[in-house]
Length: 214
Length: 214
Ligand SMILES: NC(=O)c1ccc[n+]([C@@H]2O[C@H](COP(=O)([O-])OP(=O)(O)OC[C@H]3O[C@@H](n4cnc5c(N)ncnc54)[C@H](OP(=O)(O)O)[C@@H]3O)[C@@H](O)[C@H]2O)c1
Ligand SMILES: NC(=O)c1ccc[n+]([C@@H]2O[C@H](COP(=O)([O-])OP(=O)(O)OC[C@H]3O[C@@H](n4cnc5c(N)ncnc54)[C@H](OP(=O)(O)O)[C@@H]3O)[C@@H](O)[C@H]2O)c1
Image 1 (tube, each protein chain N blue to C red):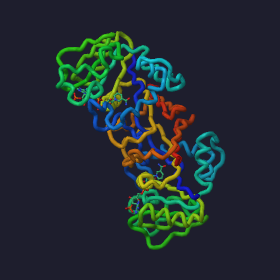
Image 2 (cartoon, rainbow over the protein chains, first blue to last red):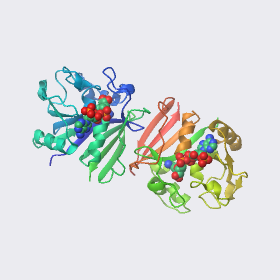
Image 3 (cartoon, rainbow over the protein chains, first blue to last red):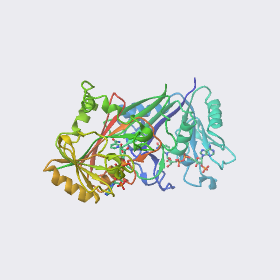
Image 4 (cartoon, each protein chain N blue to C red):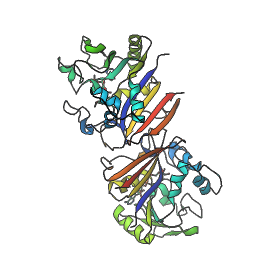
């Protein structure tokens, strides 16, 4: 059975999935790089940056689960680019010519560019203005029996969880208090029902939370 | 040096310290008993209820720290009683004739009863309408060199942390999504600075967070 999964999604202690003031210079707003330092310290994170080394303890064990078995990703417009990227015909995402997805990747936006964007390395960005349910249906078809990753940011993560569409969630709670930004937990009262929840604190200071459909 | 400490303060995964709809029949509103089940399963919790037994692992080790070295408590009006307890001259708190404080206990309220309430077992409730700073000063005097506990609820916990008055915080994150109630983290952007933070996940499913002044 194809599953819908969230991986390596960082949240602050006070429940924000990104900061305030998103821009070209500040993809996470005032949160800066603090949300993902735990990941860049791992072997997985070093590999993403084209490097080697990095820690291979519990943070890495979780981080490595990001790729295997994934056949497509769905992300929100806020992850794909800074506010109003839709007005820039040359915008191709943050990730350069060879983005780290290597699968069909569906970008939800109310102002979808008319053409998909074929990148190097197997990533093609498809732009969709549709419901979470319909987007997941399309992504599952494109994934050819493999799993679909829900890539974030917080607004669309919340929507997919609220719609009951997510089978496995991996959140990483980072011990910082952002105070402002986009909240992950809003509108999710009682959403823990139907999941087995585990929490594992890491020596790095972050806490891994997993929700697995029971 | 006398320290100011918070212990056994439960928060939901989405950051609420109590639910919505507080009343005489629902001291935690729609949260019910879910916030403190972890504690009542410990030896400490069983002892509070006048019983014996209970688990003595990591949850108990943390819970037991609630009492030793404490010479006074400060609590908010919302912990002392249901909304408008000030209008009931017979209200003496939730805890019966022998409350579990056994020290001078300062209740912050904008409508303080004129007389302190002397209870059995060493607890005297003093009612104060003053700033967190001044309340702490009075509590420290009353504590005679021992530590002062900040007893909650979330509104006053937030105020004391924001004012930089708390030396040690023990929060217990419970894996439930309350969705509504009183938020603990509001207005605390950057408040983690100056603390060493540890997180320890327990086999019971809760996660202990400690903030210790560095
Ligand atoms: N914490 C993490 O691990 C993590 C992971 C990924 C990203 N992020 C960060 O999260 C931030 C972005 O998150 P965000 O919450 O602002 O935005 P987001 O969740 O990425 O995207 C939300 C936006 O996508 C579009 N959208 C969502 N659902 C749609 C639907 N069903 N139909 C049509 N359009 C839809 C809408 O944009 P339009 O109306 O503009 O089209 C909506 O405002 C960035 O800072 C990013 O770096 C964090
Ligand atoms: N999560 C936990 O572990 C935990 C621990 C303890 C309690 N609780 C729960 O928390 C809830 C109560 O919390 P809450 O946030 O609603 O209220 P609270 O923090 O107990 O009390 C806040 C109230 O105290 C009074 N107050 C606070 N500071 C004051 C000051 N400087 N001067 C004068 N008055 C002041 C004000 O009431 P007035 O204006 O009415 O006087 C204010 O609304 C209850 O449900 C309780 O059971 C939870």
